[in-house]
Amino acid sequence: MFELKRTPFHERTSKLCLPQNWRRWAGYLVAGSYELTLDREYWAIRNSAALIDVTPLMKYIIKGKDASRLLNRVVTRDMDRLKVGQVYYTGWCDEEGKLIDDGTVARLDETSYRLTSAEPNLRWLAMNAVSLDVEIREVTDSVAALSLQGPNSRAILNRAAAESVDGLKYFRLMQNKLDEIPVTISRTGYTGDLGYEIWMDAEDALRVWDRLMEAGADYGIMPVGILAMDMARVEAGLFMLEVDYTSASQAWIEPQKSSPFELGLDWTVALDKPGYFVGRRALEHEKRAGSAWKLMGLEVEWEGMERLFKEVGLPPQIPGMAVRESLPVLVGDVQVGYVSTSTWSPLLKKYIALAHLQRPYYEAGTNVRMEITVEHHRQHAAAKVVKLPFYEPEWKKK
Image 1: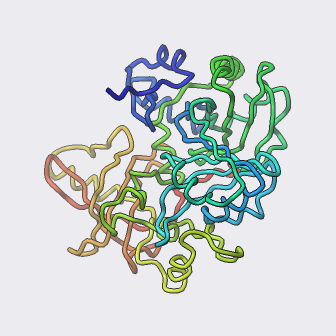
Image 2 (image 1 turned 90 degrees about the vertical axis):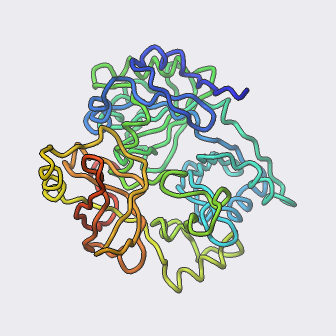
């Protein structure tokens, strides 16, 4: 019988998880929420500091003389431009230019990298490493990871860490110590806010957790589950594998697949880098021809939603968390796309959604209608196509 693993932080998270609201993530149990509602956890991300267990991220150490060459062959970014101490966000594709997965690549030293992903990718990496002088090692279980997100995250780390993080730039990393424990701190995250991720040996996990919670006590730190993070990442315009797109390696039919261009990752596709990389020819063709689909934002017109509910004598019914459900998007009576995740934004006071739209309806400013359910009946609320992200605070990159 398959048994879900527990992260190295489980001894702490299990005692704090009041509703025992657990979710499955890459073979691990993680807290969906720590409280009965998501309000305080969401606002910790936006107003103070959220501590999130992100250990289930798949992690690979890629090292050796040809490590950069392997990554250049696999990912769409130009690895020759990645400096030691820098982190790239990137995707990787099949030969048809359709996305298999996305994650980060951190350059640890001249010949060593750490790649993170949502799903297992060891076989794909090994297949592309044939004839190369490179070692690929999965370290998912041996490396624990915490995400510290929110406007107070820098102040907390400065109190907890041996060295100040004031000089750590966006998408850079540094070696540091917390309570004499060696850690790697990267200025990365999945909330669209100021934030950091802390990487450590699994056996040091509880001491690092305790040190951060102690240092953050005066700054409103809270343990936060993945449901509140889900709301924040939609505001930040960040998509999720197997929710907002299907891996090309798992799709049953072609329409389920998406290219980096279709997902708004144009800036991660380095068609100017020399040599071959997987999917290059297909991506060059799509760049010339244009994309048939695009992932865009939808802002749902509140007055229209209010009117539809008022007709049946109800106030608008707003879900208390992000909804990972496909909802048709129409222009007139013709379906032109679908929503993959939608949520109420407590900060923006808007109902927002990530939507896959066909050309030409993915242009910002296009008026569309999104399906909603009103007292068990399908209705359609007016919405407008907007660029992503919905929310990006000025302090995120400063």
